Structures are given as C-alpha cells and as structure tokens.
Amino acid sequence: MACLLEAPLRISVLSEVTATSRHYVDRLFDPDPQKVLQGVIDMKNAVIGNNKQKANLIVLGAVPRLLYLLQQSSSSAELRTECAVVLGSLAMGTENNIKSLVDCHIIPALLQGLVCPDLVFIEACLRCLRTVFISPVTPVQLLYTDPTVIPHLMSLLSRSQRTQEYITQIFSHCCKTPEHQTILFNHGAIQNIAPLLISPSFKVRMQALKCFSVLAYENTQVSMTLVKVLVDGELLSQVFVRMMQRDNPIEMQLTAAKCLTYMCRAGAIRTDDNCIVLKTLPCLVRMCSKDRLLEERVEGAETLAFLMEPDVELQRIASVTDHLVAMLADYFKYPSSVSAITDIKRLDHDLKHAHELRQAAFKLYASLGSNDEDIRKKPILESGVIELLCSLTQSDSPALRVNGIWALMNMAFQADQKVKVEIMRALGTEQLFRLLSDPDTNVLMKTLGLLRNLLSTRPHIDQIMSSHGKQIMQAVTLILEGEHSIEVKEQTLCILANIADGNTAKELIMTNDDMLQKVKYYMGHSNVKLQLAATFCISNLVWNEEDGSQERQDKLREMGFVDILHKLTQASDPNLCDRAKTAMQQYLA
Image (tube, rainbow, N blue to C red; front, top):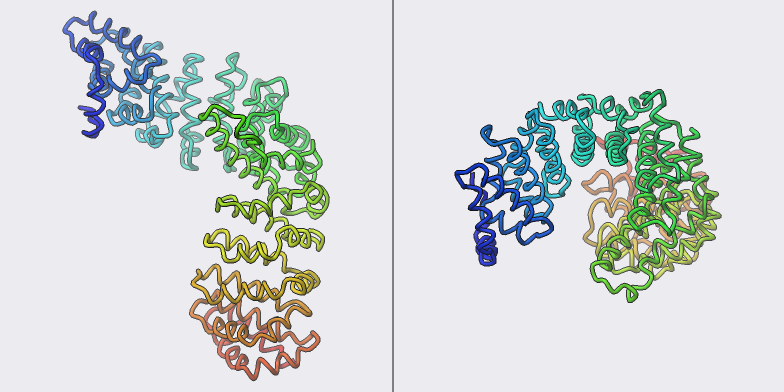
C-alpha cells in the first residue's frame, strides 16, 4: 500500500529531492535480485546520519518497497536483513519519519518477520522495532494488538544478548498501564527477565532493570512476586541493593532504587527494612546532590518524595541525611546565570529541566513537611525554604504559584504556631489577598487550602484573625459574592466554619450581619455541600459550652436561623440532617 503524506508537505519536500534520491528508490525495482541487494546496501550507507536524505527517500516511496522486499519469501536472507537495517536507520530520523513508517504498517510487518528462523534477521527486525517503539509518537498499544506477539517475544529472549537487550527495552517502553503490566506478568515476564539481571552485558542488565521498575510501579501483584524471586540463589531485592552501589553507573543505581521504592510502596518490603532505610533512601538522597545531572536530580527527588510520602520515620531520616533540605533550596536557583550559557539549545534544555527541578523539589518539600512536626520545626524553618516558597507564589507562571502554595499548604497542615506565624509573616497579608483573587482556579483552591490549614486549632485561629482578620473576612466576602465554582465556595465556607470555632475570632462573624445573611443564603442553597459547610459554621457559632453562646443563639434565632435549621433536620441527605440536628440540640441544652 502507498505511504502518502499530506499534499503540501509532499510538494515542499519533493522540490528538494535530488536525482540521487530517486536513483536509490528506482534500484529497488530492478529485476536483478543482486542489483536490488546492492541498491539497498548503497541506500543504507547514504542515509546514515543524513536526515534530509531519509525524508527524501520516505517521500519517494522507499518504505512500502522495502517492506515488500522484507516480507517476500523469495527474497534472500541477506536482502531481508539489509531491508530491516535500512528501515531501522530511517526510524532514527525525525518524529515525522516514525509517523510515516507507522502509517505504512511497519510494526506488523516486522513482528511477522520475528517468526523467521534466521537470528541475524530477527535481531535486525527487533532493533528496528525497538527504535520505533521508543519514539513518543508510536502508539504502544500496537504491541498488544495480536495476542501471540508477547509470548513469542518472551520465547526469543533466550536467543542472544541482542534479542535480550532489544526486547526488554521494547517492554519497558510499552508498559504504560496496569493492563500492560498484567499482560506481561501473565506471560512470565518476571521469570524470563530476572536471570538477565546477572547478564555479562551491561546493556542487558540495565534494560532488564528498567523493565522491573515499570512492572512494579503501583502494582502489588508484581511487587509481591518480585520479593520472593531468586536470581542465581540470591533474593532479587539483594540484587537491586548491589546495583545501587556507588561504583555502578548512576542510571543503574537510580533505577534499582526505583524498583525497591515501588516494591516498598506496594507493601512488598517494610519501610523499616534495612534495604530501604540504609540503602535505598541514602542512594536517592545522593541523587539529589548538585554534582548530579539535572535529569538525575529530578528523578532522584521525585522517587524520594514517593518513597517517604506515607512514612513519618523515613521523612525524619531523610530530613537529616546529607543536608537534603539545603540541597533542595539549590533546585530553585537553577539556571543560576542564563548569560553564561551561550548555546541556545543547551539553554532551552536547562530551562525545561529547571522547571522540572522545581516541581520535584515541591514534591519533596510536600512529602517532608506533611506528617512530622519536628521536620517542619527545625530543618525546614532553618533552611529559609518558607521565604523561597512564598516568593514563588509571586511568579508569573500559574504552575509555579500553585506549587509554591501547595508546598506551604502541606507545611501548614497540623503545624505548630511558630510555623504558621512564619508562613503568614513571609507571605504577607497583601500577597495572601492577591492569591485569594487569583484568576487561576487551582491557585485559588490551594490558597484556600493553605488558609484553612492555618486557621485550625483555636489559639491559632484567634491569633491569626486578631492580626489579619479584617482582610481575611473581606476576601471571604468577595469569594462568596463572586462567580466561583461550588468547590471554591465550599472551601471558603469551611474556612468561615473554622473562624466560627475560634474563641474571639467568631465575633468577626457575629458582628457582621452581611456575612450572616450570606451564611443563611448558603444554608438554603440547592447544593448539599454548600448547605453542609454553612450549617457547620452556624453549629460552631451556637455551641453552648462557650462564653457568650446565649447571646449568639438569641441573635441567630431573631435572624431566622432556627427555622432554617428545623427545615434542614428533615433533609434527605443524612449528613446534612445530622448536622442540623446537632445545631438544634445546642438550643435545647
């Protein structure tokens, strides 16, 4: 079948096509098989490192002819192999080249070629398939279309080191979903790939390791199986530990640490196991140091954040390991001097990774500060990170603003007063007010989340509202009056309910009739979430165990709140009904 490109592209490229390019394609149609073979070999030599020549040959229709020759049983083994080699070379060009090859159905043709007994031809087909599949423009699902393909690839693993390298690389790039993990697992991926971890070939060991990292990611079934596997009499987890040793290449150390991280997060290895505490965690912290490449630092920080996210003890250990918190501050200072970089491509690459570095650091800060008070109190407060994050909330980039606030929100969660006061001081009321009127909904939601975390526990609520109450109430009013989503208004009403829980702060609501009318409106709203949050606010205001409760109850009764509460006790939503009954009981006590 013809491999056609869109007409405008074809014309523009054809205008550059040289007579030589035509000559290469014409020779593929020669009746003499020997001349055809020589033509393919000459074409192979012509396209090496020449993207323009590759594009010309694709436009002139070389691909369908090469695929035809590759699939013909009358073609010699040498010719078929050379066709696969040329196709592999064409695939190493641009993404457009790959798209053209995929459109010409190169994948089914090469997969069919794998049933041939000739090993050299099989290796050439696999090499080309590998190049096609590692491209981001190739749909990975094409590997799973024919159910006989995966088991056949498994059977080819034993043929040679090359088949091992190419097949494991294909698997690691094409395992993108839980379904893919299950297919590979069910076809014996673990048993077939595990022995490759002790292959004499570094490339084979590395690709096998990458396979296990994608198979184990968020997969309990795979992880629980991996933990029992023996490789040459040694537990797989110990093989991974050996691969994390400092004398191994960084790529190997990092990927082995990922495997153990994923097995740990899936529950196959305990978080207090020595292989995690003494090996994996220190290895990942090492990957965060500034003498590592940008990509390695990003991957190391993201993996470390994932490892310790649910575990307070790991967070504590990480926070005091190798000055990690101070190292992370460097992530925000990159690139330090743009003018020093003269290569534009390099600058583009570094700026992209600088953004990824910041994202990775945010994830790590969020993990470090999410559970353990001591970590927040000492290493994070002393490192100047709070000022850094507050300054990022002023960025022109919404993504940076969101991440800065997100990290602050996590730090404020169940934090002590010292941390909260420091956040408020560093952020400043003006900036908080600006963020609460940010046009980006994600920024607004994260800021409301931050404010909600700051306004928790009574002494903190009273202290913050005594110094910033006027501006916070003004922001709450604007949001409740504005055109915002249900989620934004619910979060705002929850903040109001927290303020209503303060000892002195609740007076800022009680003395504001306009605000009380807004709460009343939302108690009668059609959305249950908003009704619940508003009712919760009133429940806190009328709570009878607190000073001044009788006066507050009387005022709210006069404003008609008791009638609304009575109606809500008949609500169809059980949570709303219960909340209204709880508030009503305060009047009866």
